[in-house]
View 1 (cartoon, rainbow, N blue to C red):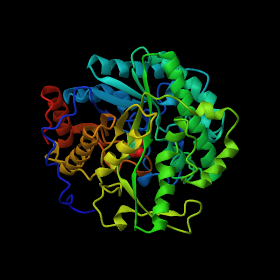
View 2 (view 1 turned 45 degrees about the vertical axis):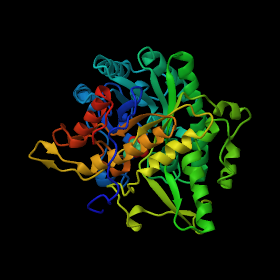
View 3 (view 1 turned 180 degrees about the vertical axis):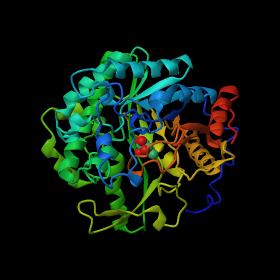
View 4 (view 1 turned 90 degrees about the horizontal axis):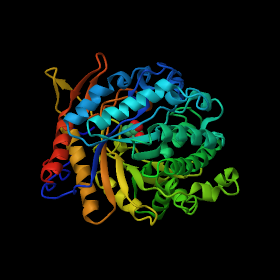
Length: 466
Ligand code: FCB
């Protein structure tokens, strides 16, 4: 990794520019990455609880069994959000805490936990934003084929309805899925995330069923909570060709169809992006009569989650895609602990791209952030200036998009605290708050204080100080 951000990536003119009063500033987290208490109070095991015990799946054999112990420490974390004056908190529900077997019997203690969490937010004037599914599927359902089994439509519908009934009286903002491209791609195609399945015969049905669930889940929430604002969230990356050759440019189109268009377009009634990636025609095998209508829904907002850009080259030896995503370390660019290139313009380009769809009413950046190797100094502080640079540069690009009239209405930092980063275990630290995993002590990083003051400034005089 390079030591310093390259020149020109500073944050010269953020001040004097305004986001306005109705912009949603927030922080994000997810259940599996933070809660721990994996088998407490009646919770059933999730696919990730099981997958993380398999050999060589997670860096350093880490597991999410304890994580940041959020299940027991949520009040402390909410007190910190409140002390920093951050008005919105996005978190997810653990399906197997609410329905331990995925379907059937409800676990009252699971419902109690989320009721307490939601109430704790509201008491401090923090708006809860709920993600229904952030990758932790009840293991009982995984054993029935998980996302490859079309029955998941009914399972998901029932689960969503339980959540809407239990929490819909107090929760206004809902997101159906977190990054379906990642849980289907990494989990059912590459096999590097739970459940570790591989190949297109797992990936394609998983994609189609996730597309159906994202629409059906939104309809359930809308029916049961008429005042709710319902969205869903997509991973996305600005994609540029390695060279200006025709071949590389065509490779960009294929990867764009896969990474950026695959889930939004069917939701908008545009069908799968087969024009960009003809191979996707193979998904027809899983489509039933009437699915066209079921796939479509009217989201109030679209959450986009952007971290980096991808640089793509034509690669004849890669089946179907015929494209290679060139890793950041091979390109001699500035990158983070995840090997993700720091490329602030990417978030601008993605806001622009998603705003351009007619059916998209508003875009909210529901995740953006960076992992850097943080160090605790004097047992009390973390001077993470790289993260501050990262955030201010990306936020500048969000502002640029907003000032050009694109429909961006909010921005959430990933993440509230350091946490269990999936296959990378606890190694990458994304938090605004540092976690000492030995003691579970929380230390607000400089970036946390910085972000809090940015949000407060907005409240005070709308002036950004970075
Ligand atoms: C996103 C995930 C989130 C977190 C960040 C770093 O893909 O939604 O859970 O792992 O990446």
